[in-house]
Length: 330
Ligand SMILES: [Zn+2]
Image (cartoon, rainbow, N blue to C red; front, side):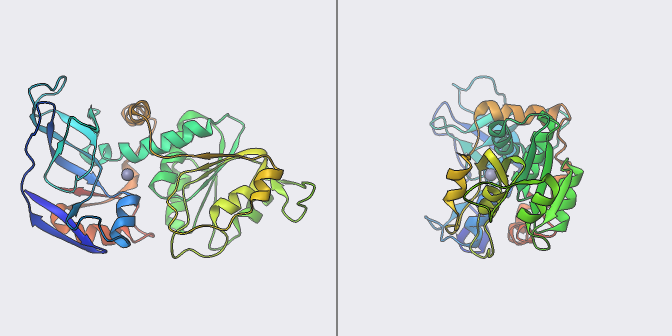
């Protein structure tokens, strides 16, 4: 079969590799039809030396069941499914029984490409569940990539909270407005903290008069802090703009350590909540949001490439101003 194999930073090649075979009666073999490029794949593509040379990336995908072990129940050859496991930038992927990833039937009427975005939406649903939005809340979403945009969609599906989105890209911010953010702030043009104070009003807090609190209930940080980033880290801006007893949810990749003032956390009694991945229940919740039409993922799939053009696909995914989610079609 054909696969996109990563050798080192930005060195990805299409190669003929052995098609995986079932190894236990509990295994499933999937013919991959769409495989999304994740922020974590992009991080590996850009920076890392793969742990073992010859890594096949891709973990958010959809396809058809090609073969099943005789102990597998509830699946048939030919079923359209969405799944999560590693190595999906290839024509076939084996899902081992041990540590088996997720396989669920694909929502009917949903395309393979949209279905491949259920996994990142499940991350966003996890964030939104932790945010636990109420209708009158003001929530700031830092970073309008696939996770931040999905978080806006999930928050919007769950409440009528006021959502403010922050990013550097006008393209991504226009998408954020389309998907439910009421206000957007371009962090390259305005200071997000100052702008949020202007929008929500501010309160002076004793012992930290230089940093008045905004009136933000929850900040969802989906921006992180990457090697090339400069200025005030979004997580620090988030701590500044939160109201006393507000909540910060951290769901990002940090390529370097951000400078943050923990006195803001102490003085305002901020609740800091880490966030990573999702539960099976949240994966199903994400699939249901798409199935029911509460969430439309089509605008987020900005490009589709055949597997042969994996190199071009990854390079395009690096183009912040034009790409949101890129899907490979093996
Ligand atoms: Zn992912």
